[in-house]
Image 1 (cartoon, helix red, strand yellow):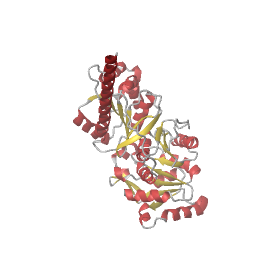
Image 2 (tube, one colour):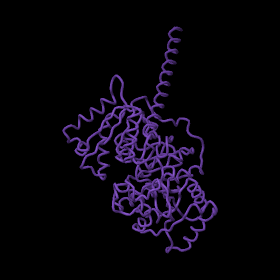
Image 3 (cartoon, rainbow, N blue to C red):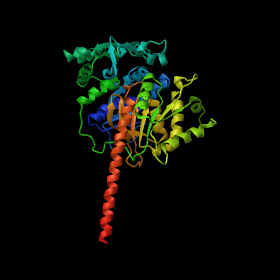
Image 4 (cartoon, rainbow, N blue to C red):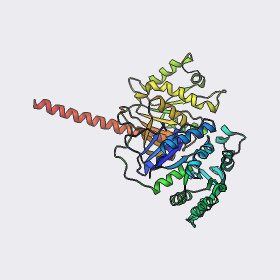
Length: 440
């Protein structure tokens, strides 16, 4: 299956697409949604439009442009945040006029996201009551039907559990909607509480005859991938580059991210640098900007033993979630001069990951593997690029408490393998040189 995934941030694009990479599809995440050519045509393209912080109108326009540039002869999956952040309703509305009925299923049971009665639940708690929602949307309803209506789309509800006993229920519902013409619904909000519900939904959508597109998180995408398995993985899909320090870059300030950092510090004891927001707000104009860059460089580039580093954005009373992109960009600017030293990068928070890759000149990632749900491993997708470190991306509020530790351990194992291979190659070359010298 040729598929285009359109996401509004980088970690979401990777999280949604990783299921297809696991199923053997050649899968690329791109930061450039302009429709440029690839060295090898991917089966799945996941485009990060970087629209999370735009106005709804600008986000809708950029999303439509991405579909026009990349959607030719590809089925469409609009990736949305599983806690409904960003401009998802406006983006869905922009695509619906071009792609047909929107099948809206943000459930991701593996990460605690379910939909019941049209309400999105996070570990059984209505989204509207969670800290995640209150942090950015206090006082606003977390109602999908209302949000879609605000973007001009009429919606209806559908329960995926019906498909276990009536596999054709969705097809009949879609046919009825199509028969209603302009008066019919433009979106179906799908209840789904288990992975089996999503699997049944995925199977039913693949049998639809009418025009539609998927709208969901990584949960539905994974079920689609299992039904559309491809050939075996590329044998070179391990990731990694020359052994070097691992940088854990944390821009997210969620409670989940705090716990993950705590576990990482406890298990590994790696060096940690927390950059104050006031330094990042001022950038190069700050009196101590250069010293912060030097501190990062000294840790990563120590002559005796370069250290793995946990690098974080601090927090102060003036912190505003809306300034996340700016702070992430400045943090990436501090790291950029030292990026070539890295053996691996772990970036948590989509804005943080994108800012770092932009600063390092990396426009595309080839997805390789998954450490746990929502934690993807990739490497730069550019065969002429000498430095291709393994890159792990993770949404800030996603993952188990051990997610960052598991990612660090995975990259550490890759690094050990590569060091062993390097030693073996060196030993083999020494033996060859000795034989040559003896022969002469």
